[in-house]
Each structure stands twice: as C-alpha cells, then as structure tokens.
Amino acid sequence: MRGSGGFTLLEVLVSMTLIAVLVVILSMALRSGINAYSRAREFNKDFFPRAALEGLLFRQLEAVVTPGRGELSGYFMFDGEGDKIAFVTTYGPQGVGRGGILKVVYWLNESEEKLYYAQKILVSRNEAREDLPDRFYDLSEKELNENGWLVATLSGVKGLNFAYRHSAVTDESSPDKWPEEYKKGRSLPIEVAMSVDFTKNGEKNQEERQWYIIPVGVR
Image (tube, rainbow, N blue to C red; front, side, top):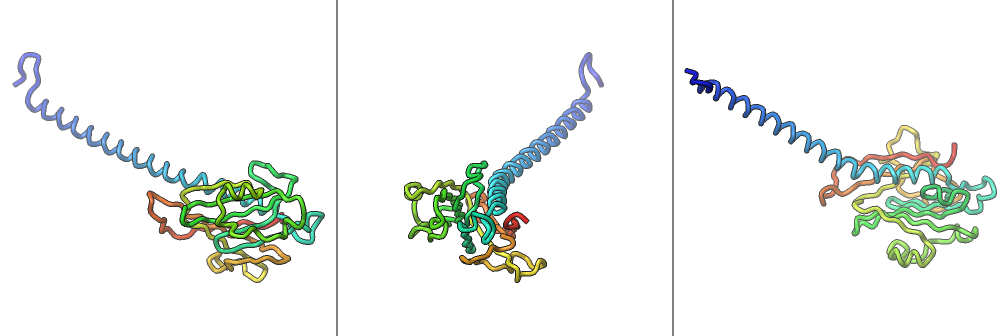
C-alpha cells in the first residue's frame, strides 16, 4: 500500500533494478571507450613514425642518383643489406637538400632498439664512392657529427629489414623471396621493400612481417 506521498516497496525495487542496469550499461560503455582509446593510442604510436619513415625513404629513393644519367651520375652509390641501406640522393628531410647531393644511411642498432638515419652533404665525387668510415655503425652520434654526418634516431624499433628486387626477380614473387643484399655496383634495384617492427609494451612484436614496397628512381 502506498503511504501518504511515499513509494511502495515494489516501486523502490523496480527503481533500484533500473539504476543497477543503467550503471552496468554505463560501465560497459566506459570500459569500451577506454579500450578503444588505448588501442587507437597504441596504433598511432607506431603508425605515425612508420609513415614518416616510409615517406622519407620513398622520396629519397625517388630522387636517388642514377648511374649513367645526367651530370650527377658520377656521384652514384648504392649499397644494400638486410638491416641497412646506403645510397646517394638529392632529397633531404623536409626538403632540405633539394638541389644538393646527400649520402644517406639507414640502419638498426638492435641492442638499443633504435633506428638510425644519417646524412652527409657531398662536395666531391670521391666522397660518394668512398667506403663508410671504419666502425661507422658503432660510432656515437657525437662521433658521427664530428665526421660531418647529421644524425636522427627513432626509438622503440626492434626490427628493420630490407629486400631488393632486380630485373631477374619476377613481379609475382613476395619480398620474402627477394635478395637481402644488393652490393655496390653500377646499377640500381627496381624496387626496395622495407619492414619495420616496433616494440610493444616492452615485448617484441611477433606479428607477421609487413612489407612496404618502394620503386627506385623516377619511372
């Protein structure tokens, strides 16, 4: 029975049940929102550095110095391995170096989980053909700077892989089957495939390798 201006026991129970259901629904929605935000933040943490790296390498390989073509052909140099690549290009980060000639090197310091990028402005053809300094990949940033190299690093990288397609490799083959070495010579590969693996929560990423394929030179 309803008292004067009050509620029945049934009405109170129904109200409490409805409130409990609403709390559960709101909690689930909040948890889903937090999980979605965390996933998006984790995705962006890897996506933006990867996209910037791929974009820079794409533009530099597009502007690579080509052997036997034009006045710059004497500066040609290309040397590729499974976890490092070095070549001469006319494109630098943010457009710096457009019209100039740069020797650029990408490599991975696995113990530090850092990807290194180094560039050096060339003033002579001999510099283009010279081998990299002794222990180049073991030098500190300070030592590289003292040798005329501008260095940038990207942390949280646990894997860096390159593969190279030349004229003898068919279009249908996967980069997993391409050679992982393209040593110094008088020609360029047709395409370069790059795969970058980022560290997630301090643990190595075990996902399947994803390749980013870049055409070499302006075609």
